[in-house]
Length: 342
Image 1 (cartoon, rainbow, N blue to C red):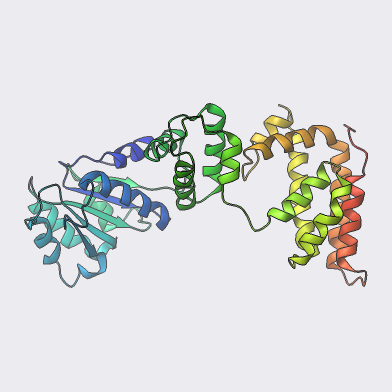
Image 2: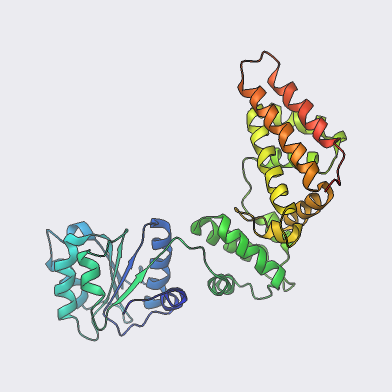
């Protein structure tokens, strides 16, 4: 059985223990590892490692010792409960040993879970699993988790009071982070909300989301976009003492003002444009950027982009002008620039 679409996440959360084998493969090793851990935990229940109900085999070893897999699936454990034999990082060389184990598998034997990297259509592993009447194939793609899967992770972390606004921000955050970081963030939010029955808020998500190394630069650019020229001096000194280069500040400002320009030019309005940005913007920052795009307007944002592009060219040229002073002057001009021109 080949799983497709949303049924992949649903099946791996509750795999069928009566099926002999499960193949999980994909290009992203982190995504495969997360899905494998989820499936194995669902098959074995708690304390499987301690009770020796989970056996790990390296896929590369099966070529030399094909009987090892057969021995493990037929072995009788010391503790009662379901057993799993995990074959990790398998390749086509392991296919004959897995085929023999599948043929000999009977109810009561350990379930075989096989993980692999990207497998082409001609892969021996895929040719073994896909036509099999009882085995299951779960291809893992690089798609971010959907709302159903996020809801399940939230429930596992003890979070059930998640209103639509918070779920929208979590979905955006899932697109911005890799799966491992996002799963850790959900667990972190669960710990933060432990014993707190109040609904999860976008502000809490923003506070607990992983901070980027460019946080101070982002704060500086936000001040410029909001016209807070009186704050620029202190923010520039903070960024400068961290050793951040002027060209890095310029790139961040260009990225921010391009995003505002994209949002301002959206037919559905600035708020709709912010919602379509990639990478996604979430939490209070999304509302701030929507207000900034509305306040600036298209023509003013185009002038701002021209100024930043000229500044970038100056910073990268052979000019002897002090780079940080050039950048600071450009940011002050931006902060004091007239807005509202459409």
